[in-house]
Amino acid sequence: METATSCNGAPEAGLVAHQSVPVLVLISFVSLFSAFLIYFYAPFWRVRRVPGPPTSFPVGHLHLLAKSGPDVFRAIAKEYGPIFRFHMGRQPLVIVANAELCKEVGIKKFKDIRNRSTPPPTIGSLHQDALFLTRDSTWLAMRNTVIPLYQPARLARLIPVMQSYVDALVANIAGCPDQDCIPFCQLSLRMAIDIIGKTAFGVEFGLSKNSEDSCCGSEAHGGEGDDDVREFLKEYKRSMEFIKMDLSSSLSTILGLFLPCAQTPCRRLLRRVPGTADYKMDENERRLCRRIDAIIASRRRDRAAARRRGGDGDGDAAARSAPLDFIAALLDAMENGSGGGKDFALEDRHVRALAYEHLIAGTKTTAFTLSSVVYLVSCHPRVEEKLLRELDGFAPPRGRAPTADELQSRLPYLDQVIKEAMRFHLVSPLIARQTSESVEIGGYVLPKVTPAVPPPAGELVHVSCCQSAVHSKQTSRR
Ligand code: HEM
Image 1: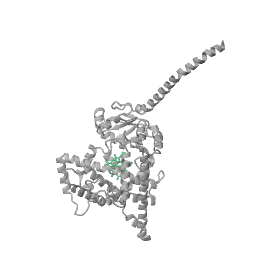
Image 2: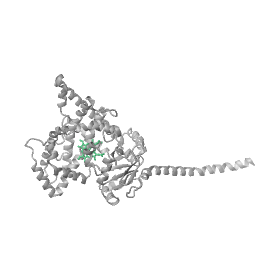
Image 3: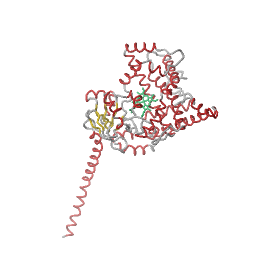
Image 4: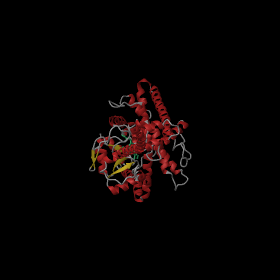
């Protein structure tokens, strides 16, 4: 009997086991999918009370950004009010879009919203060792090291250098064969890159000077060490192309938008696979690092040579009177012990990253702002007339560049026009910060970001309207 039961039971058990396989697969699939949904919607859940347009799974609101560009923020603010949610894939950003709220985020409650979010574009140490992505006390210490280098007296010494590139821009505009179609954006970008080349790296990039066809040519002409400069600029251009947060980016960046926890392992893997965007990005960054290191070494040699030339007694004075580009100034800070403190010691990797950050942060921003000013003024003849009156009334003696004081105090209308243009056309509409404590903004409580989950895991606050105040106000609020 027993035998018969087991004989009959064996195929039944086999059948049950056979039938349970698809059930197990289904249960595993449903569990995995549910876990993914919980993971995907957790950041949204914590800021669900903040208003915002309906999202599309899995892109959030990225399709709106792709369709309308940064103008989408203005449209959403109109419909949903001055504080709203915007989803970059899985990651909701809480965007504030009115001056009072911006002041709250950027000044009054800044201590709880100090860190920038680690962005989905997976970028390497060249970016991570500079101001934009360092955090907490390290950022503060690094910033305190760098702030003295922006003292008005030091910046004033750079005015003649800048003026020479402005003169080159004016000459290039005048030299354009088609005066009805001047590529101002391109020309002003060249000027900005040249200025940063000289004032941050102490290198002549030669994009706007030495150029016979600077109006039409598209490549670097190079100054000192033509080939090196040309390659450096090519690598810089490539590296800018890699800093993208959209669906045309590298695979690891795209993954970061939907499954941030998988981004770092994916990037580690892909940067070893030739042909992938991550691999190319890594290679490009390595080359850039080597190139900037060579510039730093050369600045060191220049300084040592200047010291030797000055003899024993006057050595330091001679080094100090040498052209004070940003790298030289940072080396100065390193040598005289002012480069850091308890939480931070300035090293070569920081010098490299900080100088490069100037190239990223100070070139397209400047060119875009100038182009936006020129465009908006050209659309408003009355403004143009008033501006020209002010500029014509301000004339430093021939052959002399205006002083910093003159620029500061004698052109109030120009100042207003630039600020209005910056308000009107945002240069960098998506620079997000994370809440490090639970904080109330505009009547909504934004919870503290979940710590130690790479990369962005919590709520971000983006200050979309106070960019014009950044460089002046951040200095004074600590
Ligand atoms: C019109 C031109 C510019 C605009 C509109 C602009 C805009 C901005 C914005 C929006 C931020 C982020 C602020 C934040 O996170 O709260 C920023 C940060 C920064 N910008 Fe600019 N920028 C301009 C020119 C420059 C120039 C010329 C340089 C350097 C030569 C520069 C260097 C930096 C640096 C180093 C930071 C990071 C500051 C920190 O973390 O402490 N910017 N800029």
